[in-house]
Amino acid sequence: MQWFNRMNLAAVPFNTARFPFFYGWIILIGGAAGVIMSVPGQTIGMSVFIEDLLQHFQLSRNQLSFAYMAGTLAGSFLLTWLGRQYDRHGIRIVLAFGLIGMALTLMYFQYLFAVSVRIFNAFPQIQPVILSLILLFTGFFGLRLLGQGAINILSRNMVMKWFNRKRGFANGIMSVIISFGFSSTPILLSRYKKLHGWSSTWQLLMLITLGFIVIELLLFRDNPSQCALCADGRKSPSANPEARKKQYTLDEATTTYSFWIFTLGLTMYCIIITAIIFHIESIFIHAGLPGSKGFTIFLPAAVIAVLFQFGGGWLSDFVPLKFIMIFHLFSMLVALSGLYLLSSSGAALWIMIAGLGSASGSFDALYTIVWPKFFGTKHLGAISGYSLAWLTIGSALGPFIFSIMAIQHSYLPAILLFSAVLIILLFMTFKADQPCQPDSQ
Picture 1 (cartoon, rainbow, N blue to C red):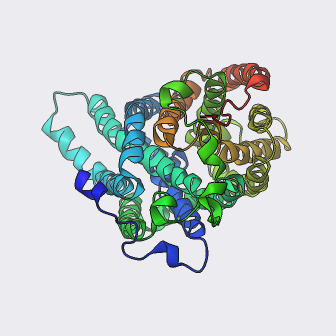
Picture 2: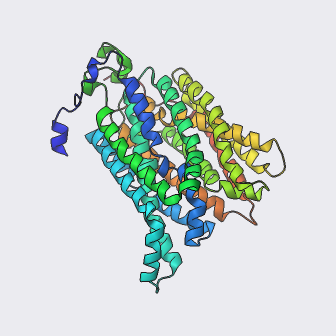
Picture 3: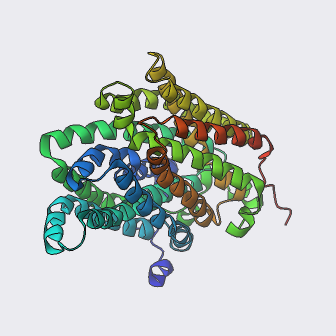
């Protein structure tokens, strides 16, 4: 790819510096669309197909959760490497390969049911459960590595490079777009699947992904300086405060207290939210409610999230991020309280929705902003990729922990465990100050 790097392709197919307005706003919309393209690899997208996978492969919920966990964990080990490739080669080529890989993975799932029957017949000496777990592990590995990992974080990082003083404001706008995209996707996919079947749904997702490659290559640019522009649309690069910051390497960032507090706090969100989404039908059925009702919580939660996404993004430009993290952890405690009371209180559903919405909104205000604000943008891919590996591990463990700790179809043990961890982290966050100070050198 060195030949690609030597070519100045920032002006291909058009020169972004000649736009009548700051091109960063195009980047913002494109980045939000890129994150939405990661939905097939996110738990919220996969949740639509969970019951179909259980029924076809005749697996228990524990077994499917294990395959999902194993695939996610395996994918997480490559995220730091992907981040370094992004730092080295830029957004366009790395994301294009990521989207191609995602399209191939979606095609794999499109034919998985039909091919699995032939594999079972070809290897009758191997237990079907073992073959099923191998097949699902392979698919989950691709979806989680490329969806939740590469496509998601690369699109977000690109936007953060185009903004500095307006970074929180820009992230708030982007998060609102992403929130509505994520909340509407399960409903749309569920309806399309009922009309056309799971195979056609995977095929549709594959075609959309392939089409987005063209959009990405045309519109995406790695950073403003590459395009003879300045962050935030400023006229003079000398006004850039980013140039005065210490640019932390990955090794330096991981020696700070704040890196681990924020990484662990965000990881807890991934553990809890993926566990709830993955088992959403089961949770509502065990609470004496229709399983399909579980999917209806996403839209009202998204409406609440929008307020905290935009408000939290705007506030992050002015207040220490540790206070937003404290609110984030408290919101997750509220969500778990609603989950605990779901079967006994009519108000519990709205408590759960309020907690999930505010936790989701504050997560988006932190997830993208914290690393460039704390550690600079020079090594952003490596730092965010390493942190994302921990978040991805958390999202892998969440559904499995919920499933394995369920006693007599009760999720209470997992709720109590997660609540205890959140309370400890909440108090530890008060000392998680911003380590990145202006560098005198």
